[in-house]
Image (cartoon, rainbow, N blue to C red):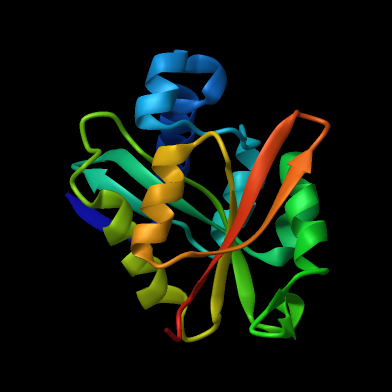
Length: 185
């Protein structure tokens, strides 16, 4: 298995295929609780543009995408409606007593590891690759995680993410935990 950046349209399609298999609406509740899930269904054109601007990190087994950690620059915040609350909130939060927006940052648009590849530190390796690729330009990697996705919350904490804030999104009836990873720590 290799950890790399998105290189082709086939890689983007591989992300979309893995995403479909792990969307909350497609995963039984018992599997959601045990294995986690993803919430946002990305538009293929938006995902392609996101990867042209800043390639996402993927795990591949041969030609098959078996994991991804999406790179989402701030300018794409308005293109994924489900993430609008997060992007609005970033403008109001602080980190180390300094406004979050004053730091060079980007958002983890979503992370997923395919069934059969979980528990093998694929998640950790993809995040370390994010740090290797982007720490020269950005200090903070920010994302939000469903408070119901305990597996994801634990995995993010293990890598080094710190909780900044929690908020309730009444539109979807979900509590979210905003976390950040400081590449300088």
